[in-house]
Length: 486
Image (cartoon, rainbow, N blue to C red):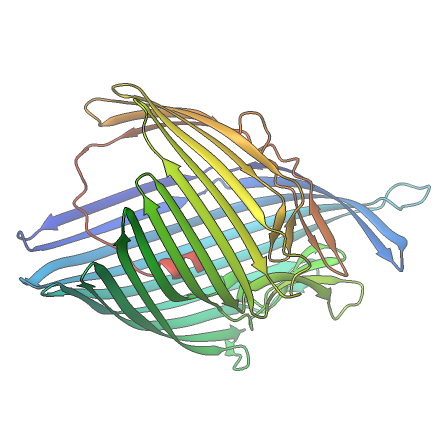
């Protein structure tokens, strides 16, 4: 594959906060992002199809994808001290988003014999519209040395999908989901130890509609308890933290739309309305000493989503879809060291990650990553920054990184006008060495990314702050996990 991308976007943000008194404040924030002129992704692709080791098709395809997107986000909040020991905050959030994606495809048959190569032009059209609203209220109450936090959260979402290509139009898909949650946590000291215990209960009602008719088989209801516990304590000159947390990660909404989208004549993408959320039990150990820190994480993961290639109802076509894996385990260790030598502030981070899939995935080779970040104060108002990163080969679920690589980036930052004006510029991946060499393999498809993409980028920017003091906006927002799914 070869890809060339260009995007044009416009974003704006407006906010206001007002202190009713020294104990009560309100505020709101609106932001909008749009790409009215669109942005093109140009991709070329060569494919070969074999049946019983015999080459039956070979093609060269060219894709021109045009993206037009816009969304609006809003947040409003109330923050108040209800009593000397009780504080309350309520956040209201809203999002509206619309996307219009059009793709034209030029397919050339490279096995056209002695005559002219056969060619055909195709087109696909994908539209999505989303509306989401949420509310969250949190209470923080101090009882002596004990801190109690509790609250409720609720949201509602509607998302409409429409897709069409030369084969016809898919059903009109609508996802409706309501979520509600209650949470409580308590933290308290005991001698030199600090404990925190909490839990969260989530209820989610997911409705799947095709042409305005609810599909009860593909609709789901989920009820989940997500407990967490942690303890921190010093030991000699070290600080330790032990924690356990049960976490949930729900699939993105577009992944739940159960219809085929056209990629090539032999390969389609397909959503999976029966894709279940991923649940994980995470055990963490963190220890620190002066400028050094080491963290260890062990996770038990159930129902993780991964890409699977399988035959479709048409035996000449392979589907690329997401399915849930069985239980597997992961381990990750991260070491950091940072300090300051005069005007130089270096930071070194080294990590090792490995999965133990027990045969679910093809291989479980570890991945090691090293990054070196440097900040240098050249003078008052001038800062130089440099970063160097390197990663080894290894596996992440069923994706194999078959080539190691890394890159170097340099930035220069200058502030003036008493901190109001900031100018910055720099280059990412200066020597074009950061190559994303990955491969997915299955009995039906071997998909290899040769990593020839030029990742070098020049960034220039200007920022002016009308009020350079610390922002007094207290809105925390809600539904961060939901926003990631949109």
